[in-house]
Length: 318
Image (cartoon, rainbow, N blue to C red):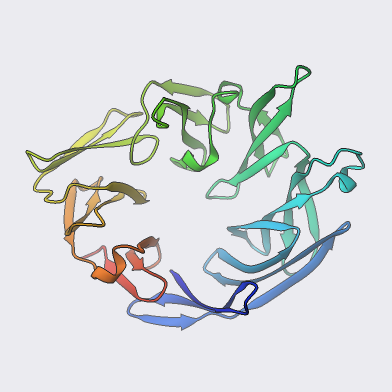
């Protein structure tokens, strides 16, 4: 798990030091810098690595984001491109997914289009989800989704996700090849349909419900009974957590089997383990309650609470 120190020069915030949290200690990570060009596009960022992941920061030039996936010396980044690159007169910008070899400096284009809205990388780096806006002859816009296999270079249309008013920020990877994403917004602005898709085959199942924790998970809290009922829309599995004294203002998925029930105005909070069907009562310091950020450290098997000034670890093995 990482934490960092920043400075501000009046124009932009800059990351100065990056630390990994190991047990009860923190270790400053080596800071490196990558600079290069793809055609006329400048690429510049600093980065630190831990295990098989990269943490990129102080990003400049055409780079929009760098994915944390690292395979040997290769990482993937999204570039904001321009009409000049596509040799078109249109002023519409697009995006390009590139592979960067940090050792050789080679930058290789993987996929690009002036109609791409965003890319999302699968946790194992095998697939990239691609979202397009396609302008039709009548002036309307068609929203298109595809999955791009970075090994075979094959792009597959996810036809059943087209024009469903889906947003990438509701997407959740169930595993390396399956996603759940919410769509069909109701009058209250809530997503009411779940699309469960195998991005390797394009097969999609539609569920007429969308979870309030993640697209596939729903949590129903009973104030009277003081229980939290977790239900998986896809599998139908459910489990009941008893003696939950806090009415959650929200429930969030932390990592795989772990969910956090949280209320900014009230304590305690509860860390729920779906697999074990257990709930652990937590009392994080009050100074974290209004600026909460929660992360999971797989290496340490620990939960990290931080407000970017104070860092607290919860050992999940105890």
